[in-house]
Each structure stands twice: as structure tokens, then as C-alpha cells.
Length: 604
Image 1: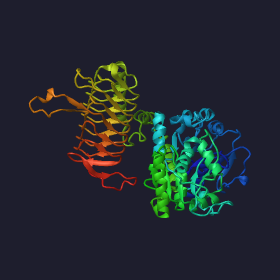
Image 2: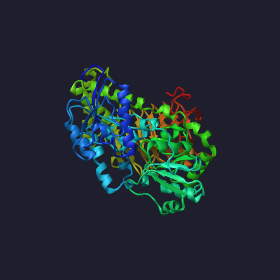
Image 3: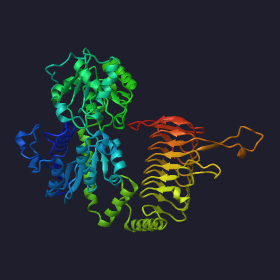
Image 4: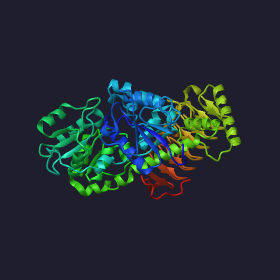
């Protein structure tokens, strides 16, 4: 930083006037909010070749300097030309990270959907987008819009865990300031459904049309208006084309913000049927004018909370039911989304981004050794947060030395990408699979003898004294155990996989937790229990579950994503997503919420 509390920042503004509509809205809104929130920063935008300040739409703010790219391709412009830029503290690119830079490299990666669902993209798109994760490995910071998108980026690119930050988005400034104006051929208010998005397979519009047309919900008298243009792998079906010819579906193409705003404000319901999204800006647009909403129950949408009627985007009955409810509730049902615009703002987004940038710049002032260890720690542990700033050099050196010894110890035993504490016991190793950067603490015992073995995914940790056993007895082999990435098995835990144990990603199991998957039969009081056999049932623990100290999870239990189990609880049966259970036997005592303002007991 060239002056106290001031940054010189260069924005990749290749999409300022063209490119994906959502990307253009993000870019222009980001720059507008930045100059308003941080007027002391020196902001420069790099526009595409031939575009000058006077011809930009929207206009570049007067306080922002302008320069131009020379390469007519955004991926090359961002990765190569931004690398040559000098005199900036930060270079903020869109999707494609500069190959090098003296400045801090920050990149906004809009989504990594192409890695999870390559079938939704054309071959040319996949080849073009493949450079995004490869280049991102050189970024100091990777920004993205939602926690669910951050999770996906890290899941497919574990090395980006420490650099990736979810910063949210807001209502596009152009949309917010636009005057609602009816299109020239606008239908009567309240006499149409609305869908907004590019016409491709991911947007799932053909399935929506099949479902609504088949149920008789859409018709020439109540058509579905689709605002968007064809882009990417096509998704329209014969039924979609037939509905267009019949007048039950009207494809409007691209519309200016004012006309789109009018359609949102006057629709009978806004329907968002996407199979996947990184964020979902149209939902904020719809909420800003009080439109009733029916939407897919996908991770990024569920982050918003109960803002409308959710449906399974692959279940026609679910779609029809949710859209019908939205139509019946009308504007009264839209109250659920009323606070969305206040919760997601560009002010909050740029403050989060700048805060992360300043923190990273300050970290650059630390000794090179500490920065290298901090980066390695975040990468190997799959975490955002690195070393505690109060950790002294001597203590850090001891910790590093201990880790080096543990790495060597694991390597000598045939696991060169893991870390082993002292006195680790491994039995039936041919059935044991350890992912990258797994850690086994002092005295851990793993017996992998079982049908499927014992599997620890990348960055999983097993603390001191824990026992993982795939089978109980050799007369009846067990199913085995799978522990997901970045999950921590606590000290002195016992996991018995006779009936199969599956634990998801990012879970925390406190000390002395027991998880079993088999129960003894004891109904015959004339025979010893040990002779009556066992009943096996798989135990499932979803992603992001916290289980408090001393809890017991019995065979056949199913614990949903995001659930919390209190210390000492005994769990059997079903625990729903985001539910908090405690007691013996465990029962529902609370629920987690998006705002975190619910009842939160002492969990241990």
C-alpha cells in the first residue's frame, strides 16, 4: 500500500460492456460499491480493446482510471496482460488468475460447476474453463459468491482451501436504479409466470415446461415468460418447442433492466428451476420487488433461507406443488423474501473483499519462513485460517519439526503423503486407504480387515488413542469405514464398522465419541447374548456434523448434514439436517438457522 489505509487496485473489466450478463452485473456493481465505500483507494479498470470511457454502458465512475487490454480474449487478457501490469497493490481478475504479478493476485471465481458437471458444458467450454483452476493455484486470494460454491471449489481443488473466501453478492446497481417499464408486448399484470436465465441444460427450463404444461398450469392465458438467450449446451426439448408454438411459453430474449424489473414486479410467480447455481442473483432481483418465488432446493439457494417455495428440480410433482403454492399465496407469500436485499449488499461484499486483501498484504510483511509454513498449514489441513499470530517463532519451529518427523515416519511405513504420530498400529494394510495429508495421532489403532476396508479421505485427522475397526470377528467380516475429507476423529474415539460407517466431509467428533454399526440380539434369556448373533445396520453421518464429547451413535443412526449432537447424547434413528439433538436417548432440543440466533445449548 502506497499510503496509509489506501490501495492501488486494478480491476479486470473485460466484461464491463459484454460477456455473461451475471458477470457484467457483478463487475460493474463491484466497482461502483468499491469507489463509494473506499474513496481513498486508487481504482483502475482494464477495459476490452477499443472501448473508451465515453462509450461504456454503464459509464465508468469519474474517479476511476481507465486502461485497455490489447488481447481480444478475456482468459488471455486476464492471465497474461494483467501479469505485466505494474504499480498496483492488488490485481483483481475475473475467473482467470494472472500467471505472475508483483501485486497481490486476487481472483473472483464465479463457479466451478464445469468440474462437477462437465456434461452440462460443450467441449469448447470445458477446454476454455479448464484454465481457471490451474491458474487459481497462483492466486493469493480466491473470492466466490456463496459458501456452497466455496465448498465446491475446495472439494475439487483442495490446494485452494486456505485462499478461498465466500463474500456474497448484492442487487445489481443498474437494476436497483432502473425505472420499471413495461415491455412493448407485456402481458397483463398477474397473468404470467416468469423465468430468467440463459437457455441451456443447467437452467432446467425444458423440465419446468414439461412439468407445468403437463399439469395444465401454463397456457396461452397464463404463459411462462422466459427472459434469456441461448448459451452453452442446449437444453430445449420437443415439449418446450411445442409449448412455444402453442403460446404457453414466450421466449423474450434479452431485456433491459427496466423492462425486466417490470416483469418481476407484475408476475404471478417467479420460478427458478436451475439444477445448480453458484449464487442466484435473479432471486435477489425478484425479492427486491416482492415477487412470489418458487425455487430449486439446491445448496446455494438454501443458503438464503426460507425465501419461497422450494422444490426438487428433477421431480415434476414437486415442481408443480411448489409453483401451485406460490400462485395461491401470491404477494402475501412473498413476505418470506422481504429481507433478502438488506442481507446481501455490495457494501458487505466489498468490505469482506478488501478486509481479506489488507490482511493478506499484511501477511506479506511476515518472514518468508512463516508465510511458507502458514500456506502449507492451510493447504494440508484444508482450512481457511492459518497460524495464530501470537504463535512465537520458537514454538512454530518445534511444531514444524514435529510435523517433519511425523511425515518421515509415515513415509517409512509406505504412506509418504500422510503424517504418523508415535505408536500408530495398522493392521490389514492392504484394505487401508489414506488420502493426501491425513494425520494419525499418537497411539491410533486402525484394523482395516473388512469387505470394503477403511478409507480416510484427504485432510482427515484421527487424534490420539482412537480406534477404527472394520470388523469385529473373522467369522463374519464387517462392511468397513469411510471418513470424508477434512473430518476430524477426536481423541479416544471408537468407530466399529461391522455394519458400515460413512462419515461425510468437514465433521468434528469430540473426544471419546463412539460410533457403532452393529447391535447384539438378546431376546432369548435362556442363551448367552454372545451366542444369539448380531443385527447390522449402516450408520451414516452427513457433512458438517459436530458430535460433542462422549456421545454414542448407535447402529443404523442417520445424522443429517449440518446437525449437532450434544455431549453425552445417545443417538439412534434419524437426526434431520441442521437439527440439534441431546440427551439419553437423544431428542430434538434446537435447530441451527442461517442467522445463528436460535437456541444453542452447551454441547461440549
